[in-house]
Image: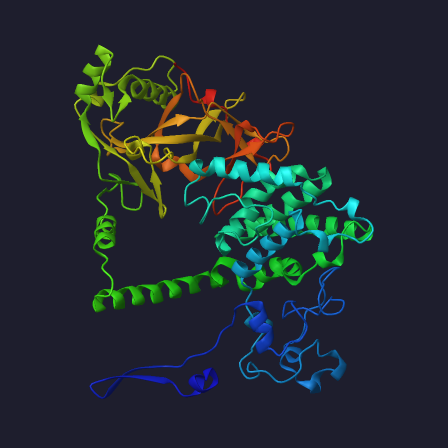
Length: 559
């Protein structure tokens, strides 16, 4: 079909007249690996179309990456290579006249990485990891996790769900039982589980060298999924995967694992750096976009049911209508900068706030006014490098709008404000990472990163002659540091009972949403650590967060 459309264009007519023509070319094809192999008439299970099979018996791919196949070998042009080097392809395929390069067969991270996650789940699960053990050396298997440890991980995940936003974890953040692989996870959930949960909660139960290899694998996967990848990132991906495969190969030589670990999806990781280099970002090649097509089908079914009168959707339509047109306030400087999103809780005249502060009573958006004033004094001290800050006269008499949400860089940040009045939720304001500058011992200005929980957003004119900006009022983490077991993972703690430190900063310095995950104590698995580990969507943390994390005392001068 595509071959015909590339020669005979589609004609678009209006009132019998041709108004447009279009030739259609098949640039690449992708899909479930089983179906692609079937279309290729490829009888060997698994394997990347651009690689000579390193399999033994057509199933397992231990050893280094093989040589790339030629285009002719994929299409079974027998004049170009000996008949006994067909690599399992049994006949001429539908792609014969379409393929123009090896990159025609795209790499789909959605199915590859989610299937890889399921394999890792099996490798860890005490009820399904027997097939990966070396017969006779089962006691040497390095990925063994006991049932008690798995239950502790499940408990930690479930206890952390209220600290996780939908942006941080793409779908269902729920613990998986060790004997229930299917569970309630979709493909995107499995990828998030592999990238976030495995290095944080599961890897620490493994031997040290195994833990380091798992952490390298998960780090490489997360970097490969970024929307921006530099040459340094590409090298990072390659070295991370090399660390993982070097460990697996060592285990194989020492008869600690079976060759069954080296399934096709595992083997495909060896190709990821070259795929990104030659084809672009994995997210741009992903079949995730097909999910949008599924969404369109669902909407078509919805509209049919609505028109037919078979089902009524009045309640859903009202809710959707309320969400469709958010009330927002543009940034006073320019479009594209953070927007305040309503419904706006209230507005305050700052002259009234001063009177409330002087009287030592009342609240601002249900928070004690004095805590906001103290946070603002700390902000002035930081910004002006002033040890004895005071409120300038222009701070008073202006209108300050309080907002529950903020939009920035295609992300909506939700504060604690609407959740304080909702008794049906245990969630609080979302957690974020933001940046601030400080001077080091040599008086050099450095950027450091901090974690906080959003309380509310507000508009404010800081300079008397400036346009103003949008700010965030937040609860600052009590402590933050890089984890001892993995310096790429920040850990934080927030005050549970007692005095909390509050901070104000410009919304433009918000870096990303984050989620907080509890970890079980090593000595008492039924108890959770007081510190929580931090996860972030889209972009991986730096390998050594000790170099970029600040300390909360950098931002707090007065209490």
